[in-house]
Image 1 (cartoon, rainbow, N blue to C red):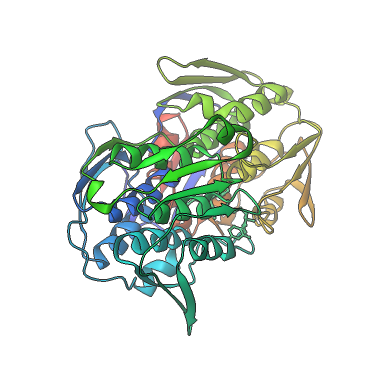
Image 2 (image 1 turned 90 degrees about the vertical axis):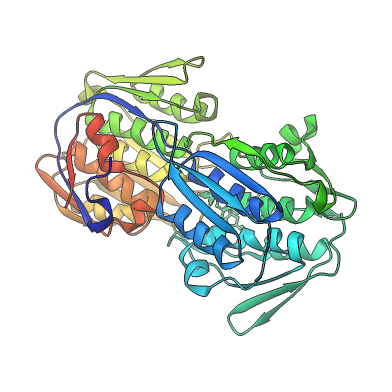
Amino acid sequence: MAQCKNNSNSIKMEGGSPLCGSVRIQGSKNATLPIMAACLLIPDKCTLRGCPDITDVACMGRLLESTGAVVETKASHFQTGIDIGINAGSISSCRLPSRYVKAMRSSVILMGALLGRVGEAYVDYPGGCVIGERPIDWHLSGLEKLGAQIWTEGSRIHAYVDELKGACVNLPFPSVGATQNIILAAATAKGTTVIKNAAREPEVTVLCDFLNKAGADIVLPESFWTEGRLIINGVPLSRLHAAVFDMIPDRIVAGTYMFAAMAAGGNINLENVPIEQLCSVCAIITKMGGSVVCNPERKTLAISVPERDKLKNMDFVETDVYPGFPTDLQSPLMAAAAIAKGELTIKESIFSSRFKIAEELRRMGADISINGDTAVIRGAAALTGRNVIAHELRGGAALAIAGLAASGITTVSDISYINRGYQDIVGDLRCLGAKISYE
Ligand code: UD1
């Protein structure tokens, strides 16, 4: 149970002790948001079980409600999170309120769903984390390929189509969001859409699974896994129907806690872990000297770091599209690398400005230099507790990891960023034995 999370602006922790305990991993944020958007396409009630109770999910709920959909949440029958009922039986508006669109970049994928459902969408240019340039040009050109007319009215985007028609969309880069947006628009388009160079992240395949369960006809051929070829055979809207769907666990939250164990030392067990999605992370942890034991049947993963003084950095890690090392875990890795021996070079290949955490980590004693898309972490630093500020979601969580590794008290403020993606980071880390509380 979150302790006063909603009224808190900061978290405080006393670092320096190893972690020990078990925690169940929440449902995936990045899978839940597009699947909630997909519910707009379906003129019937869908139930999404085991979703994370986070502010981005609440924001997507408000956006759906603004269209006339009915959104109900209740505590999940799973051990954590919420079940969300979404009934988009009648849609009365395609104008999304600026306040919520600007709060969250993933609001842009509602364009594809609204075009599919009512043929029109008004949205602002979306907001999101401060992690560099995040254009939406491939979203817009993909929707245009399917026949949408798109123009700008002040700071708003207006999209309109009489009838979406299947097309071949060749993405310049396998963008997760653009792939999802095009899938949503293509699901009820007339004819077949082929996306070439589609993103292969689990958050894309699970969106296809959900839509197929609700009556869509999306095919992932062998060539999807090798070259990102995705086939969407459009079906009439009337073919889509109610579905109950169990959310997948959050690979990024699991990875965050794996790096917390590396930074603080100890033995932790994670339950409800998408093990097969974390191969790149397990490989790095093992190479750094941590021990990982997976039980795929029980979906559990144990990490043991008996002597964290013996951890050593790999020479080089580059973020990459799935199944490569995820950009969302780059900051948690940086926090753990600060205390391991040796020098790690991280190349950030996905986003242009994702090293904001480095400055805060330096204030805690880390030795990090940044040059463009590359960070060099000279490890074996003795981190010291400080007052630090979260500037974005994953960087904020990484500061909590650094605080657990540091001697003395660390306070991380502006935790609203962290609450966007972690339903109860304090509760979870307490289950793992951390001395941490909301302030
Ligand atoms: C999603 C995830 C985010 C993760 C990212 C990469 C969600 C809600 N967010 O973000 O957590 O970090 O995937 O795994 O699922 N780009 C363009 N033009 C476009 C679209 C993207 O230039 O129209 C660029 C982006 O600026 C970025 C790269 O493509 O440099 C990858 O972005 P993308 O895969 O689209 O990430 P998101 O879907 O925004």
